[in-house]
Image (tube, rainbow, N blue to C red):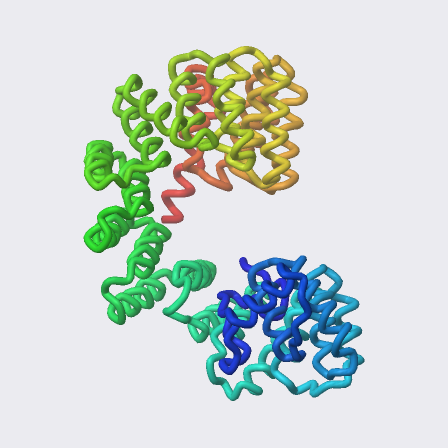
Length: 486
């Protein structure tokens, strides 16, 4: 979610949003010349305010401070100075002080620039309702004309309130097809997703395509909607339209290859790479996807070559190192696998997929304490990840530490409640320890929670569990109960 840092930094920039009477580039060039030549030029407060906005929009706080200091020095009594001071304070992360300046300002407090600055101040202070109120006053001051940036700022505040319907409405109101459509479409698509209205999102972006059939951002956004609907075939169809418009679009090739890999259609991934090469549109990530498809097709030698090609093109691409790590893991070479996986983890520390494979490799080497450290790192990222508690239990089982294996499952149940996968594993631990009474009580709770989970449970130790009459009778009892329910 994009956050406003200062008054002019709406969701999408427009250097000339303040006053069409000013030639911003001309003013900024003149100001830059003054600094470079160490001369003294005259600028009135309105001009300095416009120059200040330019630097704030481009995140050049150093020059923004110079502009503000000049304004205060040469125009100390101008009513606009309070707003300029407030903008400077906000840009330097002093929003509370800026609010005091604005509240005590001797200026027209219904002025749009004042209200925008006030709204930005409230946004920085994490008071979204007050920010929205100020921005709406600015909208009214502009008589609802050319307020796209303001509408986007209001949308951001509604997102901060988790009011995604109002956020969506204002993002659509603020849609400006002349600038940065990718970012705008992302926010709109995200709101539809949070509202579970992906069918409406599809309709919206189809409408955008009707307006401009050659809009690559619209086709890409529509494809993303289908991905979120888990309709990868439809997603690929939209991406093919992107390539019809721009056959060198690297992102489209990447998304198509990703979808084909998800669908297990690796031959189509190979075709995608061939087409990308034909148009000189291959990329490091596409080589990784091609490598993944080759590896899953059994051609690990070609997969390795592809991952190494990706690494040569981009030495900081975690997917390349992880891909090699996965191949080495499958080849039962844990020490070498860990070298690549650790590097992938250093480049992408929040990717738990890499971390779970690291746990497996440490376990292969009987480095159980190292495996547990990785599991705890996963839990620090997401304490609601049931797989982490299962991995922790398995590490302790491999260490022959049954007490801590039980504690791992209990820790997960404390966080997740009656979680069926954890309950089935707790039941299994009881049976493994010959604690049949506790095992049956836990198994019953697991069956009540998710009857179908018993299939995986029996596979933990099929011979022992299926040979336990009490276990099989309890499962049969719940099979009949479930049948009667249906």
